[in-house]
Length: 219
Length: 226
Image (tube, rainbow over all chains, first blue to last red; front, side, top):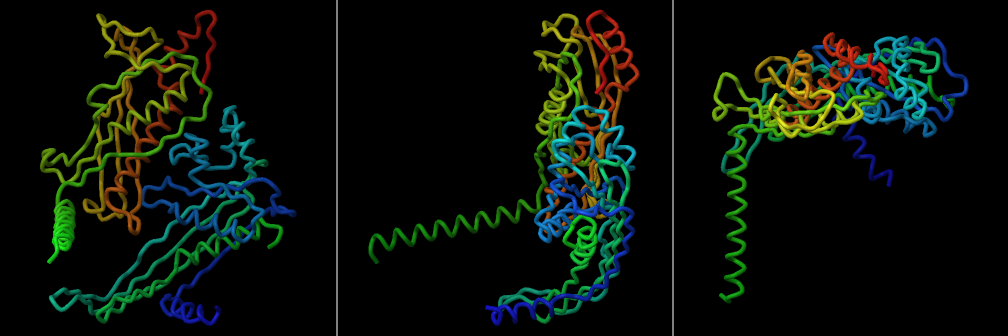
């Protein structure tokens, strides 16, 4: 079975561009025994005018954490903001841990939070942008068939910051930064072959691993 | 050639013609107007309900609200986005979560109109709407901005308050996401934002606040904020 998968793995590696990633961590207060039966919610910041944290990146980080440590319950972002509508919309979301007090003055909000057992709230801010691109490609179609010829290359950069709020203490307890850059290529001789650098995926793994160290007792 | 073979051939031929027809129509549709009938799910707000019986009246313009390129006519516009159904769905859900009782009014409140008895009637209007897609700007974001005007009137149409609020929704371009899906998502985000703005600021509107204070000063009624 592993022999059959080896060529596929090699092909996958060959078709992946290069990515360099940097992760900075600044943690103030790590829970000693993990988070027990409490839940974690990961939310994207969406109040900037020129970008917004991609929902699929938030989902990726959540999946990374719950896959690595099955004891951690990560609540879905949309499920959480729907359950607490309208208090976590871009216009109304708390920007500082102290703002949680204002929220908890609303009795239904306090009851819902207690029901959800939310212990940590992780805010992720950032985005992946496409940088410079170069090269050209020509494609044609005729009675004999179709094909492309040329070469294209482009870069992608991911910059994300995760801020961890302790919901019980209403305090920021950790901060993780990750940045990743990668160059993708697309040579084409009849068929275009995309060699894509998994920039966002690398940033997701980087930030997910750091958050696991914070949240999980096994890491 | 047997009868059954002829029948099978003609069926295959007809199916082929239909498939080609569908393909041609799909290509032609791609060249025509992009029509979006906004669809989304809107959650009920999590807040203490205001002890009011609020009437709601959606005008024809609001109920059938749509927008298209202002520089062109409706027929020549490249985009036609219908938000009416989604507006009604969102406001019905929001108001049901904000007030103890919601009553859809039989008619636009006025002096000679026989309507249900309520504390006040809310009449929302979409005064202005602007949108931007990546084809208009170099930013890879779909945006929708709306300015709502709200009238709060008595059963007989006497004004209590009249105010405006804005809402904004944007969504980034995404791989394998069509323009229509992205515009729909931006509209849903803008509608959610409109609801969030209304729900969190309704009692802070000076004229509404004054009306509530007067109303709750009467015996047996207590001031209550969301």
